[in-house]
Image 1 (tube, helix red, strand yellow):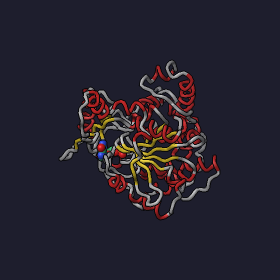
Image 2 (cartoon, protein in one colour):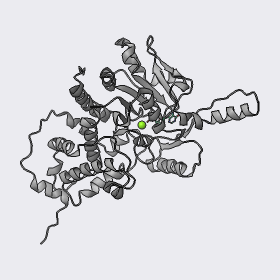
Image 3 (cartoon, helix red, strand yellow):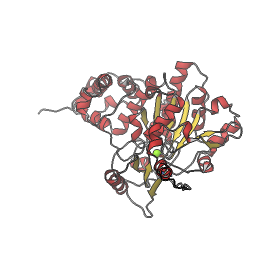
Image 4 (cartoon, protein in one colour):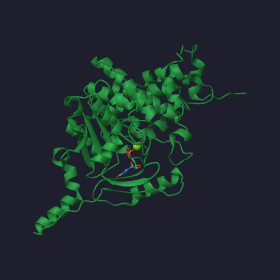
Length: 405
Ligand code: IMP
Ligand code: MG
């Protein structure tokens, strides 16, 4: 009888004695929030569908013929090669949809660290799943890759900092992390689809716990100035006022990039009216439209609607049609424009910028950021906390800044 072994199973055969694992290792927190249907979708529309991503799917398939460590070694090399020549790389041929990598990724080190806790290489029958591979890629991104050069970190709000439709409460673990990042000289931005034109108080109520902590700690202007909010994907930039620690809109000419100023429908209207000598008063409308189902539905229904709009809407200006988990929205602009504006505003280059979000599939509104900076894909706010703690430790190590838990 011949027994056929899959590639990753050979890794198990080759593995030596199990490495000692500290039961208190913080890695186990990742298991407290397993990426399972009940947790990944939480209050969201349910689905049996796993998340999908071209690169991670390819890594998963490689396990049919490679050990886990071989997959990481090859992928690490291919990414390095791809960074040299993205248009003609081997990785481009294997995964044609692939975008850019703005930093190198030490996947082998990240895998060994993760494997020491979760013993992936010792499993006999079950290769790594999507969430496990996503965790390893995230670890490679936060440890060493982004920490040294980091100037700007941006967070999606719903699903990343707090649960969908929720807001920042004072007990949110991310508050201390955000302040620690700012104290380490890093600009922190929140880049969210939620857009409230002219209503700074609505943004304030979503971030109430965070702003209250800024007030309590009497954070100086030097630190407060490193905090930014980009609403409506890329449509409204807000900053914190030094005295009352409330939010105010930053005047558009101070931050909008030239392409954004050109595609504004408003500019076209005003220009045309001026050309025709017609006096006008401008009526501003919200730059988004969305639908919220009134009965229980499933993820695939929202997905189908989002993709239909993506494929059929012909628009002169960039737009973002996305499945929000409980709704489908079409926003003018997208988060890649929001990130570009914020990077120009803070002087951060792509390799110095990291965006953390929960929606990186074809129908997600964080996906566009991949074009302009490195990203971290999280499944829920608890995972955000886990990876940011890891990042902070590395930043502190490289910059010798005090770290407050
Ligand atoms: P994000 O995850 O922080 O980008 O927020 C996405 C969610 O914000 C959507 O799924 C909606 O539930 C909500 N939302 C509120 N206002 C808007 C808007 O103007 N455009 C898009 N989404 C919005
Ligand atoms: Mg989100």
